[in-house]
Image (cartoon, rainbow, N blue to C red; front, side):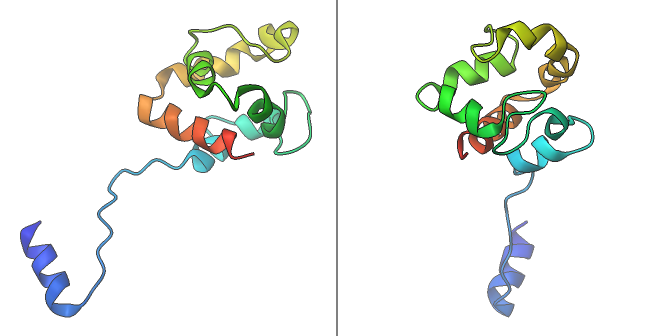
Length: 109
């Protein structure tokens, strides 16, 4: 690592040291999680839009984190939660860093 940084300093090259940075937008849109199938950016569809979710949780991101981890009940459309449960189960495998990135992305709407 020291040799890489020294070489970068000598050549004037920029080095990106953000190894493993988590992108909430990528997590939301990737084919594994498939969040975007049910949740659109601004329009409610099968699930509430990101805009709707952000409005409900903007003052309480910790509650959104807890919900995504399966530690809290839904506050948006609880009557539809049973339909969402199979997809939501995928979130339990996410790290805290991934959940935080996802929450940050959602709350930007």
